[in-house]
Image (cartoon, rainbow, N blue to C red; front, side):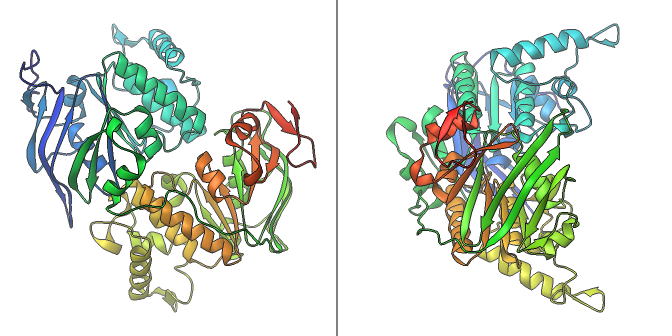
Length: 529
């Protein structure tokens, strides 16, 4: 293996700790990075902005040694280096929090954090010392974790904390955050923003990939914009605004507020009665005695801090987890005991929280993923044989409508696509098949402002066409903009119901944190918990 050409000291003429010069990276059918130059100063937070599939994650994967560039050069403190793999990157003090977590699901939180950087003595793992260091970091940066919990049993928000702690544990000086807030609550995002500021103040340099313009404006010093694999420009945050950044990213003006008329709710489509779901982590129920209705022609949003039962509620509704008790009716039909497929065929569509675990078969092609719940329908099969021409025709239609960008169109392997485009594929599949109820969990997670604008417009169209929408979102802007009714969950129970026109974000935050709770049957009236 080639040696890392690490400079003994910074070159005096270079003001940059990292310079990626004229980087080009090509994959089959797509030039992901086309002659991109990016610079990072010591102690700065540099945002990298671009649409889904613009090449942001690819560029950062080149810097971290996961990919080798087809052209260009990387400079570390003014000196050229060749980063052959992540070990070389780590030797240079470069760490990365990946958009799709690199965690071993059957290992504990502690084991994942120290994996590859274990402290040993006479060949024995010094787990006590490692635990002390991890807990100290957890305390210092406000990243509370349970070191003994298994990754498969914790929420995606908690997994994100584990990824960040992995990087801090290795004492990296150059930190790459790839969509770090995509799965965090508003409160957790505020905490992470403060953590990033503190890290930069300590002299660490941060490259921050995000689609969220509010976050860029809040913490970044500079922002570089990519579009379709090309470098558009770099701006100082003090000299720009959100609208200008979104225009640079998409190449056209973007509507940042959802435009919709008043809802006209009709018959009850989903009726949930006294539903309880057991917790895998605790003795008490993850969801306890929850009841609500969703009507045709309305968007009902479940809001709450991650880990308060929203995930288990959706698992119970969709059939991914068994119910402890309760009843679910869809269009007047009892579906409580039905399988996932039967619920799907009864008129339920589901955009899942975890697109890798429950949304896609990653090693299937894009076209096969798009017909996962429909391949057996007459449209796509004849006498038990799949009509591949019809599958491709349908997939191509959805890919074009939802602007799913992939190197080889419908035959692209889903694993090779960017996270945002994987998400768009799932949204396209669930919205375009026959359904009466759409359960949308974090539907715009990891999407750029242009894609978010489009998805929000499609959700409003669904509502106006008489569909019932159950939205689960951690994005308060999304909750306030899209909802016709808001149900707040805390501790596995619904603690409040609100009209978004009559409530503010601060009040919602108090209910989400458990500081307030409505009296049963009284909308908008609260008492102290």
